[in-house]
Length: 187
Image (cartoon, rainbow, N blue to C red; front, side, top):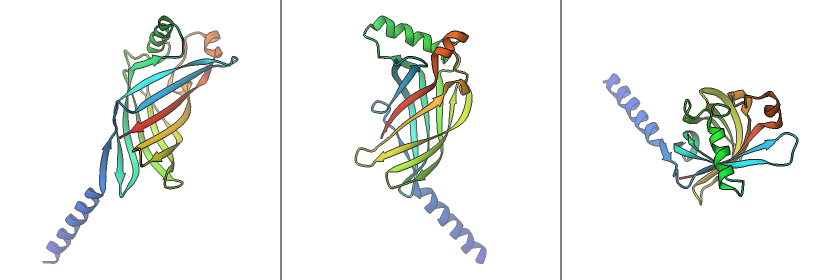
């Protein structure tokens, strides 16, 4: 009898815990990643967009506690130049093995491993970012907007940690090692 009561209690607790966790899928059409690359010794650079293939937040007891996002590296575009032909040329260069090698690595992943709430809307996030098959830990701040069902974040990474190197020592030094990202995630 005691074993039956204990077993029933364990099952009930498991159901309660499972019900407290919710998966919130992002709207990939409304969500976006804007990227920024700069020159090392000049006051300009390039920017464009990359699209999410899919993504989801994990919510437990009304708090975001994790998430997983797949980024379609084939969707990378350059949008800063007035000449569409120049934008297309740089976009194709970013896709080749000098930079992201999207034929070999068509997706990148970001998996949120920890969310620390600084306030009800400000969070510090730890995540694993995988680009070109290389996974590194990154940390960044995020802002939650519950009215818009949105999270925003801005952060930079050192591209060389993921093997994103232009195969020319002179040209590689002219490009900043930092790539900036301005991310908007909408449900």
